[in-house]
Length: 227
Image (tube, rainbow, N blue to C red; front, top):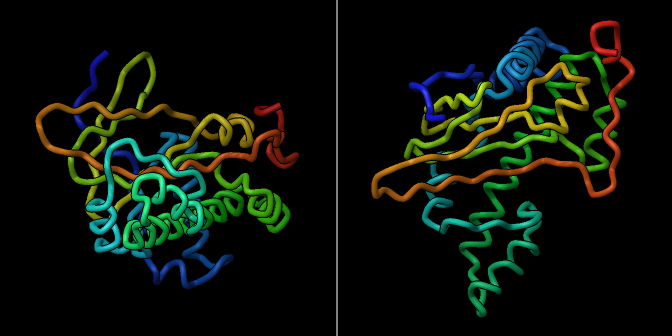
């Protein structure tokens, strides 16, 4: 079925002033609450994040072509290997641009993970398990340009259009994170539909467990409502 009119998912501002307060502060706990509510109710939210500049996004857009998919783009050597396939003599500017923004998006991913585990009161144990074993958020972060087209599925085959701002990103819960949270968080599908003759670019980082890793629910998230 077609998409409905534009719908605004929760917008959560990750301001430097709030993040610098540190874990355990009132500002941090408020962010935890907002992130958890958005993930459990909508399965996605829009992040306004100062840690990635507009210039970094613009530089990336000029380097992209539709269909690029780079494994481990936060690893500079992996980006370099990909560039050599496209340009036998290498492309240092492309490598540096992609590596820079993906590393910054990875930092954002890690930050959201800390907010999630703190929102459930899980603490240091799950922080080390998820980061050390590179399971991270079992999710997707999308860096969109301003050409509309991104949609999420809200049930019964209905799709909702999302609108973004120049400084925002979309965080999307995927099935593995819903499983890890014991059904508390809502996994949603996303897609892109568009018309017209404008080029559209986006960057997506996919956080997922390593192959063969078993996703287990923390015992703290098992109760009568979530057996």
